[in-house]
Length: 180
Image (cartoon, rainbow, N blue to C red; front, side, top):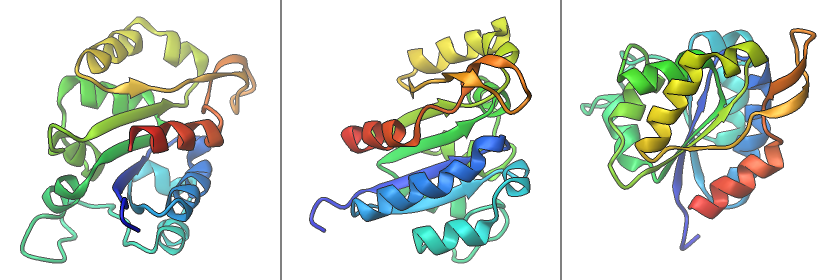
């Protein structure tokens, strides 16, 4: 495809992580290359094999699982046109705001080319989303050019009703495609 772009799909440890398979599938069907990067916690909710099969790309889990001379986090970050983090936990949002690079996803996010775009789709307990620390971190990331989509309102996995649900997959994909 002439306008094929490269998307890094970051998946963090939220119950909504299973929806990343649908996001990856739709982006691949749209003709884009999708590299999935999972946090360790994300692997409790969805397997790397699922995402590798859907994306047709190796999943990055570890900074030290080098396959070539160029460090994985540099090579993946250099290729990216867009980083989508869906779902994004309060933890990854805090790491990105503070510039902490202690896992593959946070390190790749810091190594992105300046022209690469960032789309963050939060999913967490509503109290966590509304916490002043999370809101301050969101403000920092928006000031740096990151775009947020969601969270949505509804019944949460924790049993609460309110804000914190992952934005609908089709809307995340539509926004990602528009950013590409």
